Image (cartoon, rainbow, N blue to C red; front, side):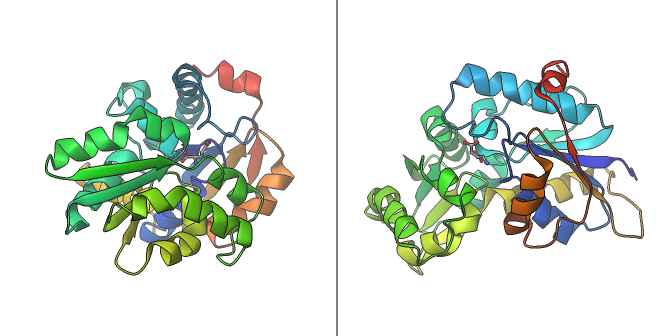
Length: 275
Ligand code: DGL
């Protein structure tokens, strides 16, 4: 038993889709969340910069005596690949491997699509992980650079003409390959899953890496006998590197609920000195 918190971070608010799933699966756990809203997006930056930011984010989370760290960011997870060393002794997971495993287990025709930020797709990490699990499977990736700004600015209705156009532009090459599974490889994308699902059609299963990472975290904590024995509901505490007001205002769309916890500001200087 261990009543320390689970640490979760993302470049912004997308990782809250993972918090939402953790709160549903293991509601008695405490969660520390950091969203680097001052420096989002990560997905259009160089590998070097993303690694620097990831080290700072992990360093900041580690200051809070956590029992598990989740990189709830498709971009960081892809750039780190299978490297868990940055968290030191603390158990660590990204969203990539849990999502790759889920996709491999549900595909029937062996054709898997992956969408994500440019850094995620260009890293080739999803393709590598899937091929290691299932060498027989074909993977079709496409970067979707406009999806994060669409979500951030609230263009999330499936009937919004701008969203529909972007979905068609980015997904038509993948749809043409006849995939039966599509990995939403960025934690912002579940927010526009209705538009994506409608375009891809009923025969295509969507995989949310946030949901899969939450299930994986639950199983890992159980295996290590680290699940909390707290009988009451756990607390969520949030940290943001930009405006607290904006964080509180926008978090609802990702959590599907009121924020229900304190939000604190963390300065970039503090992040840099956390490494
Ligand atoms: N949530 C991040 C991801 O999963 C958002 C993308 C970004 O920072 O560019 O990749």
